[in-house]
Length: 282
Image (cartoon, rainbow, N blue to C red; front, side, top):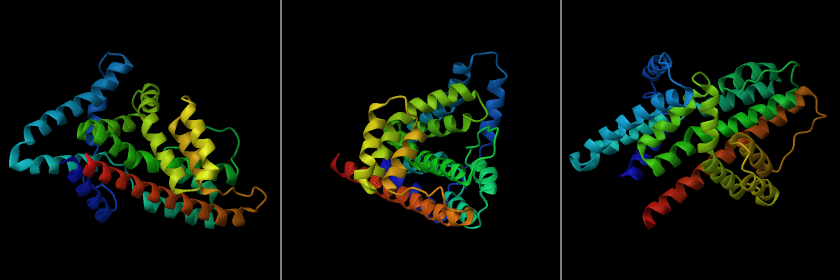
């Protein structure tokens, strides 16, 4: 039934372009505000914010499972998976960044695209186009990973409640107990991020990326975004020229971003295929 729920959710995402039709987060912001007013420590607050909704969802799913031959369970599981997928239209955001690259508007990319990806960092000095591009590429690779693969990983591992818990934790990292939430994300991203990095190497240039992949597997301190960027850019086998002027570099950056989108798509197809084969064999 889990695989059927995944298929339904993925088909709906392809039709709608995103899961925005079911992704309404006001309830969660209200719940954060209520729990935030309680006099408990950060770990307890985060646990209450994430685990209580996940437990409630699991109870409802258990009740629905025997009803109508599991059809109600499949419908709710697909809806939860859609809700747990990433926010924003990822493909439109990629295309918007490429247009900014072609026009040489890296300042707009820094203030707009990076901000929308949640990747803005505090800097004292203006960044160069090359630095902006590297930050955006890193942001897109992590966004592409966390918006669907990590969700599917925890959906298969822990069920729909696990996928929901992952999304709620991601939603906490910018505005609710951020430091503790980021430490938790580092831990739960460790395994799925390395699986995606392996897919980058296998569906890209394996020879040029195998050392980076092996280094990431052996170094437990590397976070998901750094690992995905290092292996992903190596798997593309291309390096930007720092000597290019801004417009010429913009064209190169747009091509590199398009290659990143293709790499993410190939990795997605590869892992959906792996999941399908595992379901058939098991």
